[in-house]
Image 1: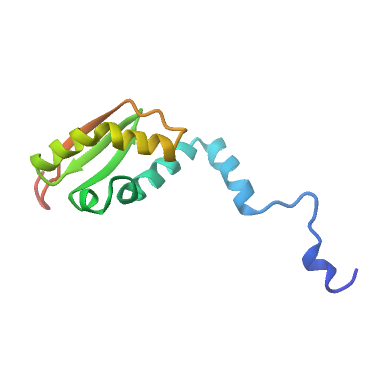
Image 2: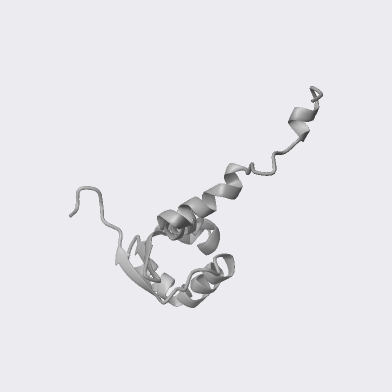
Length: 112
C-alpha cells in the first residue's frame, strides 16, 4: 500500500459518526427528544426575534407545544399567531405531529 492510499481508501465496513448516530439514537428511543431539542433551539428563527425575546418554547410532549410568555399580552399574541407558528414548525420539522399549544406565564426567579 502506498503512503497516500491510506487517506483516500475507505473500508467498505467503515461509516462516519454522522451516519451511525441516527440509528443509535433511534435504537435507544431518544431520536424524537433530540429533534424536540433542536426545535426548542430554533424557536427564535421560527417566531422571529421580537416574539422570541418575550416567549420561549420550553417543551414538546405528545404533540403539544409548551410555550411560556412574558405576560398576558404576549400570550394573546402567541394565541393569535398559533396557526402560523405551527405551520412553520410543520414545514421545518415534518416529522412532528403538533396537536396544540399550551401557554403559561413565565415565572420570575424564586417564584414557585
